[in-house]
Image 1 (cartoon, rainbow, N blue to C red):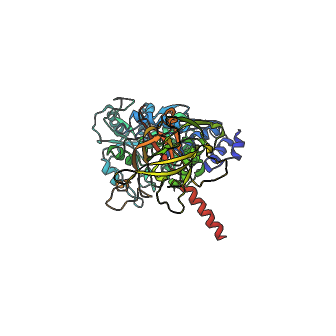
Image 2: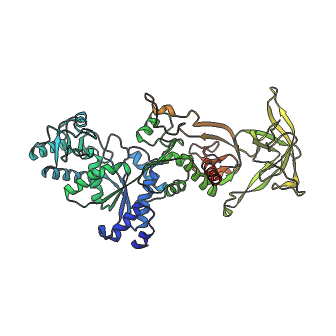
Image 3: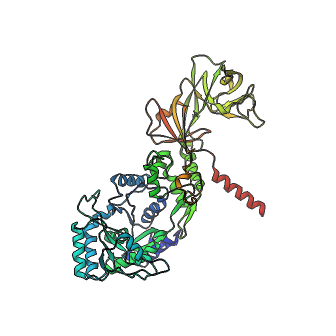
Length: 569
């Protein structure tokens, strides 16, 4: 697609800006983006919007997208996070043109800092972090100059080189840009460029004891790499004047920064600091706990990457921050899994059923469709025998009027199997129902009666003689309030953690085809929901995580809204 063709089909203001720049010959017709995460945690479900935007516009406009790690804080960053973020991006379906690191540019950033000192645009400050904050002023009051602001160029060069040599302890000095302490934009009030941290870096070791701040490293890294369009979330809008100031003060290649609204969800926390607390305090089992909003956690839960991409496509690119209902994400998860997931039968709370008129010791195999939404998915065979298991809540002795499942004297259809009728209820000494005796109609194989009689209920089942034992983990939302950030004074966001976010079933029994599933594969347990085979599985005991239930709350809400609208008309 040519640049002019792309311009006519641009779907949002960012694509329109890119198309205009390319048509005007800006950046000599080149196009390049980057996704620049800090490796201080795992990526979460808010990130696919930024990831997808950067990679997809690069593909659309014939450019490149690099992955660049903003690894400028050795106290918080680890190789584990680097590896996890690369894996997450590839899981989403994107491949970086190059994997780069801001730490690769430490020598150049240092030389540029010396250049700003020499031109009178930077100085070494002895104020503490608290004193710098106090001097900065407020949104309505200008800041105050540091008493060290007017040091000579020679003194600043000497002090900064000694900072680099490790002569001073952490916090003793910083390098600041000399801009305007009365600027209405607080970010321009002599921002810190370097701080002293005697800490080894995961890539550079002990080579450095001064580390650049994000605002200093960000734009210059873009410039070094030849990025044409630096696409950032809206929180960096007020940082753009500083981005531009640094590049202009250095007189180097100048990319264009454009901001867009980030993605937030109800019932969800995406702050890395808060996610770190959940992990460190043992509220979850790790960064990949299936309750976590991290991409690793969602992948382990069985969420398909395409559902996240589809959600981002649906939400689109905007200039105003908003929060998306988590039910919308769940809708896209169900939509994708309904289309792609293989169906299997699994009984989570088994109730034994004996088919008294079926031959003892005999097994037959009935055909079951793998996915009724996909003709190409084919079919499988499921064993049927005298001893079956059904869901305990699919039977009631004294059912209400609209209960169409199994009851004494009532006939139901077994999914892919036969019609069966409950003839006798077996109890233990305490009076609890422990088994059912039923009969089957051998002429109804496949679930249809040749005499045309119909039954109202269809239930799933497994053969007890062939069933595979499994542990099933039922995951739900980690937080039980819509906005976990909005907590009363004096309370911690941890108070909003749901006590029901995980329950475990040890007695589940599944059809034998599940032994062929791959770790991480998501299937639908018919009538129960979508479940993913967990890495904790062993040959003698499989472990499944519930991805999501079958009930689509978002679709129901939308349907009710449409009906209400028609009624008002």
